Length: 190
Image (cartoon, rainbow, N blue to C red; front, side):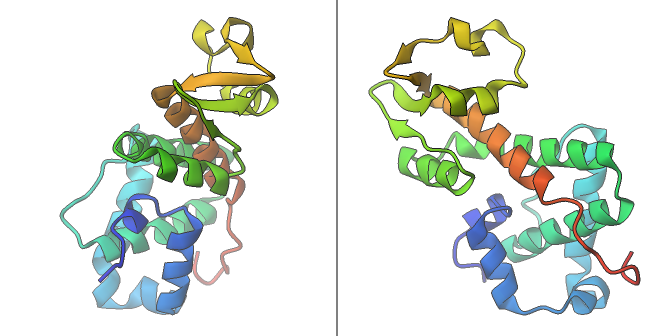
């Protein structure tokens, strides 16, 4: 049984990675043994759903198998080794967790942001982030509200609502997933 269900919700975190590593499941077992068949199917579903437009949460399988489906999906994407698929997959994984981020407490969001290189600080309205860091994550968003010229600055920091910070965190997660792909998957596995 998984110690914290959030590991399956946020499988790209260092805690989730450490948990999977500590399970000590050899890759051949993960890819061949019947006990992991549902995780393999879910991993394939993640990739297919990413291509089709969005990864849907799956509450029908145990959280440990849901967590194991993430490295399987990453292996599949890595074996295909297509830049478009990598970008599409990273975006879909990041979008899939955006709704879950809406239920999390501020401290959890700060810790997750810090894990991905962000340095948010709490403010009365939500969060503050240095303008250079803000630009790094907001540069792909084209709505006028995200342009730095349209933002309020306070001592070099951009003021963000909770909703806006979650959106920037989604971009940080996307970057994290995308930068880690493709994995060095042995040819005999692909």
